[in-house]
Image (cartoon, rainbow, N blue to C red):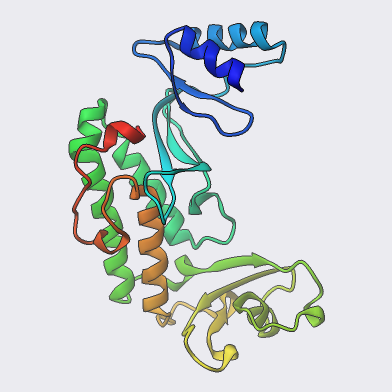
Length: 252
């Protein structure tokens, strides 16, 4: 990694991120061909095979919850030069994330990166993404979200009778959800009776509107903050539309 880093820097590239077995670099006006040539140069120096994996137009490196100045390994998202999104370590990658949150994060990224220039992403795109998060949060709090869009899916790794805990997905399986992949919605996570905290998704019909608004609002806000953490002051300000001035260049 040190040899690769020094090779990149020697050829005028700025190293922005280096998790484990890969290297993220950038250079003004560099083309895809330039990056491929850099990979070949690193292969020649190190004797190890190196190739250009992905060519980003925009890349946001995500930071620690406890320390916004520290980048977390393998947690980032961005837009590739072919127009597609690529992401690691966010809710959209998880199998248990409710569809509503998946859709919110996707819309936030697509909207933020729909602008051609970084200055427009900074001045407009981030604010537009924040508005999407606020609208989603408002719908959840007002009970307007479709419960089927709030379904959480979790796989059971063992036979149901082997579990002693009463975690939501285990309870949902006990109540009739699939024994391999429990799908359920949260009704009231603070209820003392674990069997009234969840409802199997199979029991949710078109007339059902009830869900734990407080808990889902917290999940929505956290998912939005996970995308915008380098750019806003705190999770509590998701609804406040206050951005961190002058920090975009550090994370894009």
